[in-house]
Image (cartoon, rainbow, N blue to C red; front, side, top):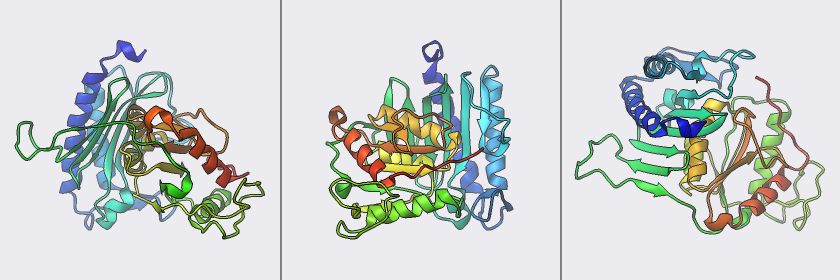
Amino acid sequence: MAHHINLQDIHDTLVSVAFEAGRMIMAANPNDVSQDTKMNSADIVTETDQAVERMISSTLTQKYPAYSFVGEETYIPLKTAITTEPTFIVDPIDGTTNFVHGFPNACVSLGFAVDRVPSVGVVYNPFQDLLFTGILGAGAYMQRLASLPEGNEHKPKRVKLSPGKKLGDLSTALVAVEWGSERKGENFEIKTRVFKTLTAAKEEQVDVGHHEVEGVAGGGRMVHSLRSLGSAALNLCACAAGQVDLYWEGGCYPWDVCAGWCILNEAGGRMVSGNPGGWETQLDSRVYLAVRGAEGGQGQEEIVKEFWDVIGDGVMVYKY
């Protein structure tokens, strides 16, 4: 169905909306905005999130009344669903915890899916004036000083994101992860165990979930390091840009990943399940493993399998 929709027009509109959202975010003083929590004290929402989503929703529904809209702040558990209809999937501020702390790593994440396939992605970090975009079949791009007008001599050229060199094993990898807001239970235990295994020395014996790990006898993988940008969308864009090799996530929602997923795909990256064995995963699966692009896909499947070995028998399960 996507080829019957003007994805370029959708893209251009979303870029314009992202810049307006960015202005609203930058105009807000995190010390003054009212905030509340959802699931727990680590799951924060502010009046700025809500105001930005209202602006985005009204703009998009007015211009594209035939398309559906799903936003984080208006989501209703067990009622809101991602269908096959053309749908805008939006997070007004991805990285709200960073935003309320004044840490300059938050973004507006604007995705558009058709048949549940991420088809347009726009991710804009107004603190860094950094824009990532992607259109199904038309590539992905990164633009620094993005809000400067075209023709400004100080505006850098837009960079096309493309596959990088062959992926090595985990010992050569920089891996993005997040703690998430769920801080107890089996999902949390799996995450903490995997984080330890990824970072531990190879001679360090670690529990890998009663799973036989070939070659390392239960030892750590000693990745180069772990990174947490505090935003799923920005983690995905970093993976798309080749700044990290992998991004593993459990607990996110479609609005966290839709835009970044499109950008990742168009940059030659790949999204699989964050649980072992799932080479195909769904937009609303809530468990994801992203791997950066590599020439000819070299090393992608191998490093995914190695990462799944680290997870072992663990299976993260999240309910809506």
